[in-house]
Length: 562
Ligand SMILES: Cc1cc2nc3c(=O)[nH]c(=O)nc-3n(C[C@H](O)[C@H](O)[C@H](O)COP(=O)(O)OP(=O)(O)OC[C@H]3O[C@@H](n4cnc5c(N)ncnc54)[C@H](O)[C@@H]3O)c2cc1C
Figure (cartoon, rainbow, N blue to C red):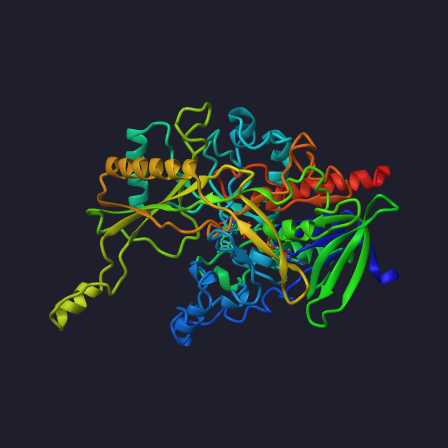
C-alpha cells in the first residue's frame, strides 16, 4: 500500500489544483495530483501552436458537423478547430440541464488554464464586504486584507501586466509593464472621464509576460509575442498556465506524483476514525477502482465538478454528501452575467494604426452600489471596451482594378465594442444535484444543473445597456447598438458556489481557510468555495485563496491539528 499513501492529495490539475500542487510540494509534502484527463506536457502536447491559418482546412473555423454535434461547447468563442482538442465535447461527458446552462470544460492536465482568456483583477474590499453589508448570501469570513498578500505572492509568480491606477474598486498589484491603449481608446477614455469623473477606464490586467523576470526565464517562460493564439497552448510559456508554470514548479521539488486518467469518484470518510482518509478513483482507461490515502485533501476539480464529487461522497455519517450537515451543498450557485454588449462607430482618426494582437481590453470597475445600496438592483457590473479598425481587405467595390486594390490596402473605419461582466446573486434555488438514475461511463451520477437568471440580472443588464450607450455617446460615438445575447448561464465560464465559505456552519460549508467545517482536513479552494462572485474575473482569486489555504493546511499539519 505504500505507493497509495501520500501527505497530500489534490483533485484536479487546472488553475487552482496546479497552485495547490506547487505550494504543497514546495512546502515539502509528498503530493499526489489526480487528474481525470490525459497528460498534456508544456509544448510537446500543443499540436497546433505553430500551425499557420492556411493549414487549417476551414482556416480555424468549425466544421458544420462538429458544430451540430456540440451545440453547447460550440457556443464558446474559443472552440475552433485550432483548439477543440482541449475542450470537452458535449457527448463525452453528459450532464442534465433543468434550465439551459452551457457548461464549458477542459478535462486534461492543466484543465482550463490552457484555454482561459487570462484577465486577472484583484477583487476589492467592497466585493468581500458586499454580501454582509447588503444582506444577500452570507458574509464572507475573510476581508481584502486577508487575501492581499496572497494576491501579491501569486501575481509575482504568474506574471501580471498592468498599470498602477490607484483605484479603490480595482486594487493595484505587482505588475509587469502594461499593454497600451490605442489612440481611439484613449480618446474614448478621456471623453468618458470628462463626462463621468468617477468612471475611470484603465488598461486591462492580464497574466502575460510583458517583461519576463528572472524566475520566469528560469522556468523557460518568455516574452509575450502578441500572437493571440493562446488557446492553442503557448510555445513561449508567455501566458500563465498550470502546464508551463505551477506543475513544473511542483515537479521540480521531487515531491509530485501526477496521475492522469484518474476520475475521482468520491472522498473516503472513515466512520471509525471520524475523518476523511483518502479518495476513491476510477481509472479512466481500465475502469478499475483504486483508493489513495493522505492526511490532507485539496478539492480543485473546478466549481461544479467539486460539487459533484462532494455530493457523491456519501457515508453513514454524511448520507447527503460530504460535510453536508446543513443540506446546502450544491446550492447558491452564481455566475457572471455576460448578456449585455454594445457596438458603435467613431468617425475620423484614419491616420492612426496599431500593431500586434493585444491580449487584453480596457476596463472600468463596477460603479453601481459600491459604497451603499443606491439602485433598484443589488450589486453591479464591470465594463470592458476596445476600439479597433475594420480589417484590411474589407472594402467592397463594384469596380475591379486599381480603385478596388487601393481601397483594400487600407484599414477600415474605427469601431468600438463594449461588454458587461455582471455580478449575480447566489440563491438557494440556483443549485446542482445528482441525478438518481443516470450515470456516466465511469459510474459517476450525472450532474443536474438548475441555474437561471432572475429579475435582479435583468435590471442590472438594462442599466449596463443604458449607461454603456450614454458613455459611448458622451465619447462621440455614432450608430450605437445595444445587444442582449440572451446567452444561457455557464457560457461566462465563471460559475461559482455550492460549497461556500462563511462564518456559521449552519449556513456555509467552509470556514475562513476553505476547510470544510465538518471535515477539517478537506480544503475546497476553487470556484465552488466562493461566497459571492464580485464583478471581476475570478481565477486570480482562486489562486490566491489556494496558496493561502495551503499555508494554513501545512501549519495545521505541523501543529498536529489534522
Ligand atoms: C475560453 C475561456 C476563457 C476564460 N477566461 C477567463 C479570464 O479571462 N479570467 C478568469 O479569471 N477566468 C477565465 N476563465 C475561467 C477559468 O478558466 C477558470 O476559472 C479556471 O480554470 C478554474 O480553475 P479550476 O482549477 O477551478 O478548474 P480547471 O482549470 O477547469 O481545472 C479543473 C481540473 O479538474 C479536473 N477534474 C474534474 N473532475 C475531476 C474528477 N472527478 N477527478 C479528477 N479530476 C477532475 C479537470 O479535468 C480539470 O483538469 C476562462 C475559461 C475559458 C474556458
